Amino acid sequence: MMPLPRHTLCWLESSALEPLAKTLEETFHSLPPALQRAACEYLLSGSLPGIVRRGVHAAGTIPLGFCFPLRWQGNRLRLAVEVPETAVIRYAAPEQTASMPVGDSTGATRAFNALRQSWRWPELRLGVWGSVALEIVTPWLWTDSHSDLDILLVPHSFNKLAQCQETLCKLEQQYQLRIDGEIHLSNGYAINIKEWFSGSSTLLAKSNIDVRLMTRQSVVELSKTSIH
Image (tube, rainbow, N blue to C red; front, side, top):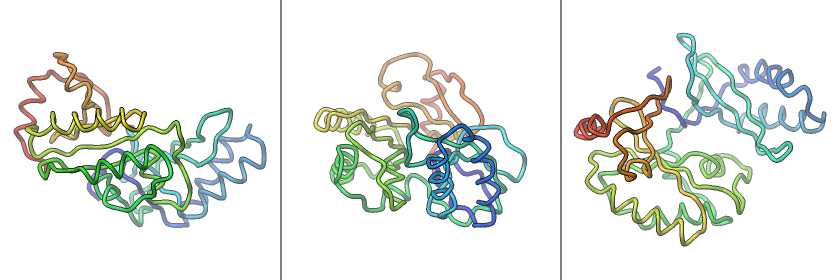
């Protein structure tokens, strides 16, 4: 299997979920029993995807993070694991998830639908991740009045990024939320779209393995390399 980029959603075969449930019980041993049982039920349902995360991992495995539609002391329950590549039976990249329907129940989902309706940049592929993506692909509600919208831009060129960013700023104001956008580069790293327009000479770049600083000039050079 080719390396899957960060934010890719992965569904696992049922035989791989049982050992993860034991890991979950060990990790969440201090939780109230009812909450621990509920988390296990979500995991074992087979409907909860793991999310490809950053991390060094053994050959033939994928580092995943499971986020649960449950909160403890105000925070989402999250579980970091490493699974065999062969356990993945289905996956969806952020660009695939962005093409699927979602309701209009919250500001985050309304903003995402408005963004899709106003999209006019064929040289930029749109992806979505975070709570909106999970609401799209699972049967549970993830977004609320405090939710952000997390998107991914895969550019064939940077020519229309300024127009796109202008639209994102307008949607932030209209829906009173934060839109976090990552620009995926041809070397596998991603940079924040707001940081790109900050004018800084160095940019924080994130990959599946690490985080490092890149010069603006090196990003400009990469922008000339088309992503397929």
